[in-house]
Image (cartoon, rainbow, N blue to C red):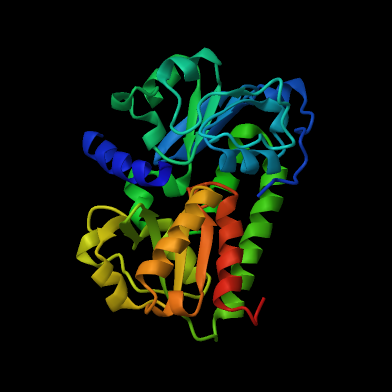
Length: 329
C-alpha cells in the first residue's frame, strides 16, 4: 500500500540524497503581469519562473485541491498518484492527463506533458534512482519544482500543520495569484487558531496514530501527523524523542507496545474503504482490551489527506479535533 511504501522509499531516498470549492479560473492578468518573473523558495532553494506557469502538474489529488482553491484549475495539465479517484470536479477531464496511479510518474511520462511547474507533496517524487525525473532534469526541460514545506526531506520530522500556510503563501507568488493566496492563508490561520483556542482548556485524550498493513503495525511519532494530533488537542503516546523515531517519522512497533501504551484514541491512516474495514477488524480481533478499541474510539483518516501540502491537512485537523473533543465542535 502506498503510504507504507512511501515511508520506506523516502527514508531510502534520504540516504541517497476536500473536494475544493474555490473558483476554477484564474484571474485575468495583463500581458505585462503575466510575463513578470515569479520567484519563491522551496526546501531552501529558489524557484524562478519566467511569468505565470500555464502547464502545471500536480503530483497528488490533495495538491490539486489546493491549487484549485488558489484559482488555477484551468492551468493544470497533469495529475499523478490518483489511485483511480475521480478528478477534482473543477478540472477539465479532457485536458488533464492522468500520469500515474499508485506511484510517482516515470521520468519519460512526466517530461512528455511539458510542464512548466510541478507541485509535489514531498521530495521523494523527484528521486532519479527510482526512475523519476529529478529536479535538475525538470529544470533542464524548462520546469520549476515546488515541494510542500512539510515534505522537504530535512523537514519531515519537525513539520507542523501550519506549514500548509507556508505553501499557501509561497505558491501564489509563483502562480501570480497573491490576492487569493493571502485570503486563503488568513482563513487557514484563523481556523488553526480557533481550534487551538477551543481545545486549550480541555483534557487531552491519549492518542496513537497507526498505519497497519496486514499484521504489521507502524506508529507515527513525529512530523506533520504528530503535530496535527497535538494541535487538535491530543497527547500522542509516542514522541519524536523516542529512539524508534530517530531516523524517520514512523516505526514498526510490536503488539505488546501498543497494548502497553493503551491509547484512549487510535487514529488509523487508510488507503480506501476496504483497507479501513480490514484494519478495524484486525484491531477489534487482536486488541480488544486497549482502551480505544474497547470504547470504539478508532478514527480513520485518509492516507492522502495527511500528505504534506495537501488541502486534506486542514480537513484532518478539523476531523481529529471533533473526534477528540466532541462537545466542543
